[in-house]
Length: 283
Ligand code: C2E
Ligand code: MG
Ligand code: MG
Ligand code: MG
Image (tube, rainbow, N blue to C red):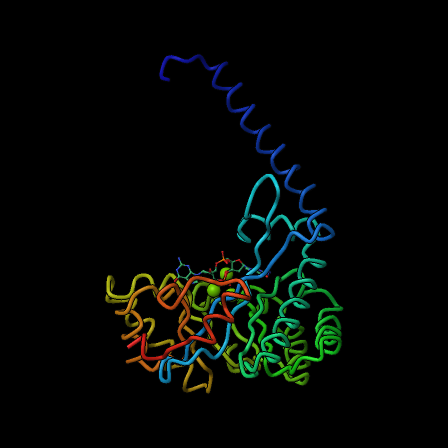
């Protein structure tokens, strides 16, 4: 209200801040217990070959089901997990679970489905990162070619030489590497040649604006052309409409991911989709 006094406004502001802090502390406490209470689960977002329309892979996306708060989205707790270091046990859980589910899919006859896992910068920067990946692959006995790590430009660029060393080791283990949210980070593209990566994921923001802004059409076309010249595969993420799908297919974008195909699914729903998948439906 316009007439409320300065003092009241201050108190209101103050109590807001206090509430935020309390909420933050509460969430931190919950997060500490979440690993042992087994409150995390993964959902899987299918990726479709734009040409054959087959499901060739899935991206594992983390979810947290907290008694009081309900389902918390990763955007809301990953930063806190990174601040507190809790991201390490959480990431290790994600990798293990994702690898176990590669094996579960394998047992059901889906032995070619690739699994992409998002990697946190904090985890990637640990000296033990490559070792921890190695152990997970080893213990779950997963075919490393089926595991793809999603990295971001801001994660690998600052210490480029160190990053390249790690990436080379990961490639030697047989993993696939992809750059997530491509186009939002660095303006220099020269690193693409120096980093042993396999895939670029065009950031959703460009896909969303397709058909609205002429420039975004050009950016998407340029990314696809450049990626192919460098022998990289291109994934478009955030594809929600047939129009976007058709455009991207026309431009030879290799792989499509987005709500147009489906929302991210729990494992049993993913299995149902794989068992009943009909490529014709996308035509
Ligand atoms: P991301 O890796 O770029 O993942 C894509 C996000 O876009 C996911 O949101 C996905 O559900 C959403 N998305 C995909 N297609 C569409 C679409 O067509 N429309 C709309 N509206 N959204 C779409 P989500 O699951 O909320 O994840 C957000 C971010 O959280 C991820 O962005 C990733 O950076 C991070 N994240 C998720 N899981 C993990 C994890 O296990 N570890 C780490 N470190 N980060 C994770
Ligand atoms: Mg991702
Ligand atoms: Mg992304
Ligand atoms: Mg992201």
